Length: 368
Image (cartoon, rainbow, N blue to C red; front, side, top):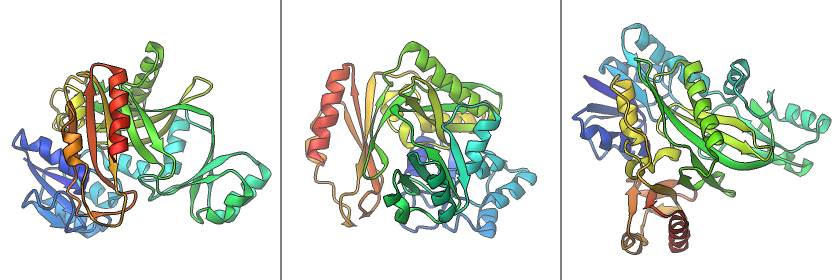
């Protein structure tokens, strides 16, 4: 059985590393000849992920297709599905998730709690809406945003000049206590398992995850609520595969679904060392219709993103000092060029003691 992955970035790299353990025959399609997976395997094809013909021809030569990025040609995937190819997540789900407006409407239709929002067509209509309803908002591009890109605050009229002039979701800025993520997997047999929720701490300037802690500091009841919400979402989608469900815990103590990603996710990197089953192995288990793995935490864990601090050749001067620390694991993504704000790798920390875990997080951040 041959498996094709659309995208060959860091998520594909970690999927490949997990696939090697099971002798899985995996190949990649990606437009970047220097993509993180390119040097790992001969089964690497350079191609445009949004081009119908290139995705279709790639898909014709494999048995199962999955993704590590949502920005792919779903029309080609739909055609491949009609020809008998197994595609997980299903093409209609990828198409839904490509559009944040459709995502929000999906939550409404299925009674999944989410923050109040408006669908806005262009910059002028965004300004008009704000002037009629002057509150604090976040403008999110309906399509194409990733890793904090495609999000703009709209708090005052001073923010007008920075607004996107494209179809967007205008979401009410709400007092947030915590940002939570839950990974959930489902196979074709209908078996569903969630990973323990994690708490994400964001970099305010880059608008992406700085670090996270697992498990999240939630009450037993809150943990049940967020895990059940993740199950509700994947069930409503009728999706096979791995789904990351990002949520807000509001100051009102209510839970709101923010966004979803139908693939391995930044909020699950720590599962490689921190959980009995990693998110990457769970994806393989789900799309190969095999029993889902035990998702329990081995210990408290944290994940810190290694973010590019300059533009130029990648350098990692912190390696010796960090590798001298116990229960600290470095994962580099094979990116030759560093860019400010680019994810270059991550670090996992394990500890039986939550206070020690927090101390190590801040110690490593100082080294960075």
